[in-house]
Image (spheres, rainbow over the protein chains, first blue to last red):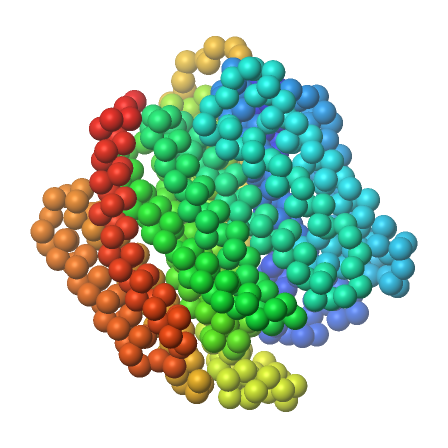
Amino acid sequence: MSRSKDLAVKYLAAAVLFFGVMTLSGLMSAIYYINPDFLFGLLHFSVAKMLHIDTMIIWLLMGFMGAVYWFLPEEFGREPAGVWAAEILFWIFVAAVLVVAVIFVFVQWGPGTDTTLWLVQQGRKYVEAPRWAAIGVALVMLVFAWNVVGTALAARRITGVMAVMSVNMVPLVLLYLIAFPKIDNMAVDLYWWWWLVHLWVEATWEILIGCIMALAMMKLLGTSRQIVEGWLYIEVAMVLGTGILGLGHHYFWIGTPDYWLGIGGFFSALEPLPLLGMVVHAVYDAGVHRMRTTNRPAFYWTLAEAFGNFLGGGVFGFMITLPQLNLFAHGTQWTVSHGHFAFWGAYACGVLSVCYIALQERRRLATVNGSGWVWAFVLLNAGLIGMVGSLLVAGMAQAFFERAIGGSTLEAFIAGQENPWFMLGMYSRFGFGLMFGAGYVVLAFNLLGLGQREAAVAMKPLPAE
Amino acid sequence: MSPDVFLLTSLSLGFMVLAAGAYALLYGAARLKESRGLLLLARVAYGALALDATGLVVATPLALAWKLLIAASALAYLGIPPVTWRYLEHTHRHGGSHT
């Protein structure tokens, strides 16, 4: 096993661990909505929510990095440039995330001073990590980019997938730098902050997962490079064409000029189009292979990715993206519902697929199947669909009673929070959250025990790399 | 926009994309299985999409620009599955098939 693949397995393991932290803090956040006294005086809702959101970013990022480190040696036929630096930074990265989590739980906040900014938190959603940790993340991203681009340069060859990934490293690193400026004007601050959040998530991450899934499809289904690369170029063009200016849908109602309403609405409305193409592609691949593969969990998670992305990003997003409607739905649980579904479909399912691909080779399994992954797959997906359905009901109640009828007054806000439909959604979300949590536990045990408990046939030893 | 119309419009937009997904799924399945029945169901799904889009254009208070966008999207949804399918068949024929 190469050093890069060893590192990949460590990153994927860390990703699954932080996926668990995200799930737990998400469940805790859900409890506050049905029992506002939960952990009163000990842990504020905002801290639980911060942990939930930040670990989501971290586990997906670690999952992507694990996937890239897994495929890099196969793409270039050599160890990544600077793999030693990546190995050291992995431990620093994990330690930093744990230290930040401890700070969030036990210190939580401080006065609006530079000391707080550097040692406690920066106070900007998604990038709350204190400045020292943010510098660490920037360093990790820089070394990650060096690993990818430097390996291509050292190998003196490039594939289409790796060319796309290498170019994507530039915005991936540069956009994160927006986490640093301290801007006093809130509208200006949000304007640039969305570059980081949206353009990372709906542009650079989309391309990164597109590249990862292209490599996964070659591995999983033996699809030819020419086919996956042709499809990748089309996907990248369409995602960037709709996704970059789709940024505008985050500029609604934050003090930006009116023209963003038109730009954001128009390009966001186009975003479901490439997702529909992905659905057709998923049906084609499933049909051509008649659902036969040596790694069923990886294949099913890949299918879940295509459908989840379409439903979460396309269907749930289109409901609230036109400005005339977004005026009422913006920032309600309706948005939360869309966010949960889209992140799950677009990214989480892909990372889980790669986990199974890596473990199949790592543990030398001829086939991966059994009942454990099926339980995990069903519980996680049913739990997620139940959660987003519940949040949809709660969000509709908020948008309808609080915004459209109540006119967004404080009184209307309180009435909206106490509305029976809203509360039903919150209780139901917690129930399905428990189901999702159970799915996570089964997934973790399945990944740990894969090859030991599953009916797998040992493969011949792979040649040393 | 009244509260009732707001909710109905949002749901109709979601239904439109959902119907597009059903159309794509059924179209793909119909081509795979060479089934006329599934192709008919795909057409029914697209019919539901077209009906929904017509309702959005005719009966909602959305601005004219958004109505035009919805109409154009409905037409694009009609073309995406067959075009994508043809492209996939073409690349699999000429780009080397699965190993």
